[in-house]
Image (cartoon, rainbow, N blue to C red):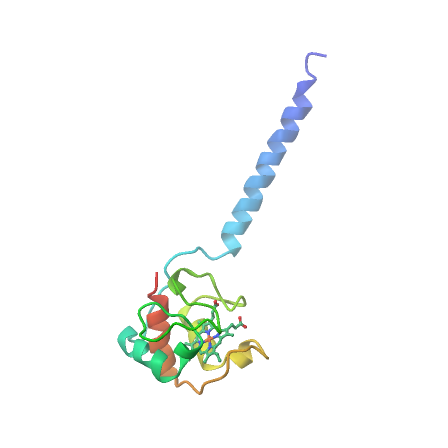
Length: 132
Ligand code: HEC
């Protein structure tokens, strides 16, 4: 009789261990929400390119004059995002790929291929990843 609570305690212990495992698993697979690394590109040229290519006609982009449209998702604090369009992890190479060929990443997406050059995409990604 005296040792009756013991099994309950053991179960609780397992629960905690399991929770810890699940949390550890999440930590390993979900990229941390923090500023993303920018290795290349010039954010100032990027800002101009966002205007020149007409990105501003669909996106709200902080700091870019005229970028106040909500056809596509707002790009606020993009450097803190974990994913691009819900499908690619948010790294600079992935962002360049998305900007250059969104249709290849997500066939049928409402974002058009805009024939963006690699250098312009790099510059734009440097600008967007700098948004915190
Ligand atoms: C015709 C409107 C349109 C134009 C022009 C456009 N986009 Fe988009 N964009 C979208 C839409 C719609 C989505 C959402 C796509 C999806 O999730 O499938 C999107 C998604 C994005 C995303 C991912 C957003 C997120 O929340 O993950 C980025 C980054 C982006 N666009 C950057 C750009 C850049 C840079 C340009 C200019 C080269 C541009 N877009 C031009 C409509 C547009």
